[in-house]
Amino acid sequence: MKTNKEFDNGTAGKSLVMITGASGGLGKAFAVECASRGWNLYLTDLRPEPLQVLANGLHNTYRMQVHTRPCDLADVASRADFLAQIREEGHHFWGLINVAGLDHEGLFFEQSSQQIRNIVRLNIEGTLEMTHGMMAFRDPLQAFRIINVASLAGFFPMPVKATYAASKRFLLDFSLALRNELQDAGATVTVLCPAGLPTTPKCIESIDSQGIMGQLTTQNIGTVANQTLNAALKGKAVCIPGRLNQFISVASSLIPKVAVVNLIGNRWRATRQRVVSQIR
Image 1 (cartoon, rainbow, N blue to C red):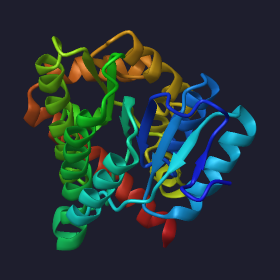
Image 2 (cartoon, one colour):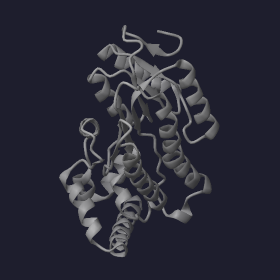
Image 3 (cartoon, one colour):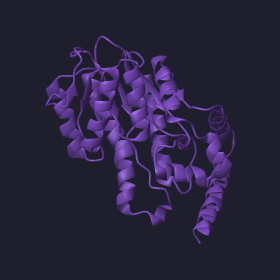
């Protein structure tokens, strides 16, 4: 194993794909899908140990090049140091997959100020600064593919997920605007807007609490990663996995926002009451 946390199968010098939030469920799915296609990777997340375990598995299975470096993408100084290290290492990239994100489900005034700040700092600030910084390291000989992970929640205001949904709306609008800016620069931006994904026990619990709709809108994370990469390679603007989810996104644009918010709010209240009654 190399001391700079790189596995090299003789392909050193080839450009890489950067994946943030690589240790999480969706991040791992993207890493595995990229590795299975023979793409060399640079993985980052908050803690080094899970990154190294993932890198070991990918290298042993697919024999491709993997770099890892931990970074707290919610922290300004940590992001600056991370990008400085990338510059020092001299890597070039043809892809960036911004997976890192955070949610604290619950009523806005029941959340702490720190929880609210962390959502904004990671979901918005972290994604923007990584996207801005990584453009400096793009491979000039290849099209640069950017994937930003937003959410189906970004299409409408969501009670109980007010800050999270707003942050994902920001990423949706930002991605579409940036895509237009980069259309003559040999780069594309694809924004992924999934519904529920069974990535953690907490996410699975939340999906289950929503009953039949939660089950119907949930997608397999491996399938989502595969479809998103295919969409990005084709230069598509938006990827919404699942026909029901695509229908929901279209239908939401035809219904007044206040009505949508009331519908979602009533649904979350019913879910919350059902969960409380089960606990009792």
